[in-house]
Length: 164
Ligand SMILES: C[S@@+](CC[C@H](N)C(=O)[O-])C[C@H]1O[C@@H](n2cnc3c(N)ncnc32)[C@H](O)[C@@H]1O
Image (cartoon, rainbow, N blue to C red; front, side):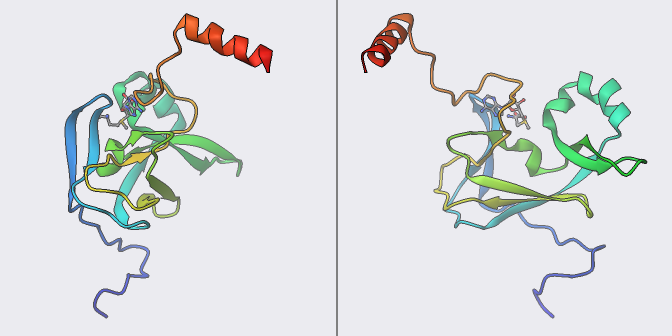
């Protein structure tokens, strides 16, 4: 009764994205920011996905900017083998930027119901950007990455390594 979560797999309660804002002019483009403190483990949103066909992705979507908004999505092919497809995420999930060092959001696929749930990995403070990790194979220059050392700093660092 009341607020108990539904166990019916055909009924998926939506989460309101209260106390979040999209900031449009960050070094990463648009990004999602907390307007107030968010406790660890809070569900931020649940987003439905559209799983793309392998060929559809390869010949069409991969050639468009939409591709940069897709996630890897495992599917089973006709031979029963697991293959990697791509999925478009509807809603807020497509707006999370990447941060390797400051990741504060984790996400979990629900393969059966074709949904993704986003949760706070730790306590998040008001004003922080909500970031997931895209992994190691980025298709853009990471705005969070520390600047490359200047050549003289690099030589200095190498000298120190040789001396130790
Ligand atoms: C899923 S979208 C995220 C929302 C996007 N910022 C926007 O304005 O629509 C992914 C794109 O955001 C940008 N992005 C995400 N994380 C970034 C980062 N750490 N550094 C620079 N750009 C980033 C890249 O252009 C990437 O292809």
